[in-house]
Amino acid sequence: MAVMTQTHAALAEDVGNIMSLEHVNVTQPDPLKATVFYIVGLGFTRDPYMTVGINNMWVNVGNSQFHLPTREPQALRGHTGLVVRDLSALKERLASVEQQLEGTKFSWSDKGDYVEATCPWGNVYHLYGPGRFGSMTLGMPYIEFTVPRGTADGITRFYQQVFEAPARVEDGAAVVDIGSGQQLIFRETDAPLPEYDGHHIAVYVTNFSGPMRWLEDRGLVSEGIRNHQFRFQEIVDPEDGKPLFTIEHEVRSARHPFFHRTLVNREPEAPPMVIVSRTGVSQQQ
Image (cartoon, rainbow, N blue to C red; front, side, top):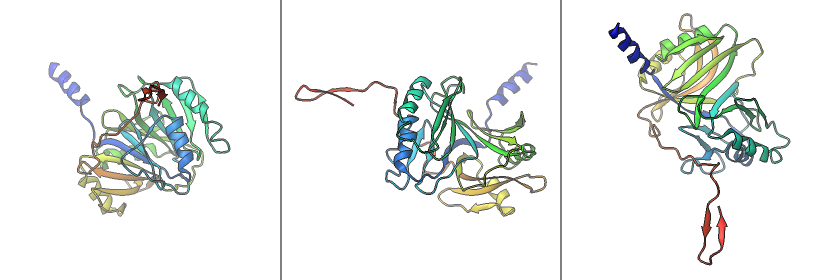
């Protein structure tokens, strides 16, 4: 009995081949409105080191990011779950940007245990306070995609067999564990889905060659190895090769130069600093 208990305890410490969910990439046509929503409204941090021009912006959310190239808008089919440090402060910030984002698809509402916010171009976010997802106080615990009815079993098999990731079907959804605190969720629906518009996600894996070889053998690699990563778009059922859902994955190895890069995250809830100049005049920043 003691051996079995130790075995179960050891299994609980295992993580799958997919180590982390690194970013969500959705294009947007207006960097100013994107700044108002993601930085001012949501309270996240524009990466100060990378893509600081007007053609793209990277936004840090704990250990994950949004990549927001400036092009025609894209919208993820589903929603992204996020954790923020203070829901009350979040609601104040979202209320403060309503006028600036008037005339867009921007909206927000208090759902009780989370806040739902929609970006100016239709991307939906569910924002939770600390404590909902373990020790995470700022970050991206999950992405939930909306997928056709009858695909959850095949999607589960895909991630189990191709990516060696813990996956299961729960309440009509395929749930894929990433590292120790993130998930991809594929929830079935009978509603018609919008056409795929090219948005993508990025993940890090330990076994890079295995999934690459499996996908390459079936003609599913959409971009070969470049800068320690490859891409594919089609999730298929390993049993019969049937296409199930389209979402581009940027698959990175642990040799990627950005693996474990420290991301700068500010504290938007902190009170302003008071600086006393040489003339003795106090200024707030």
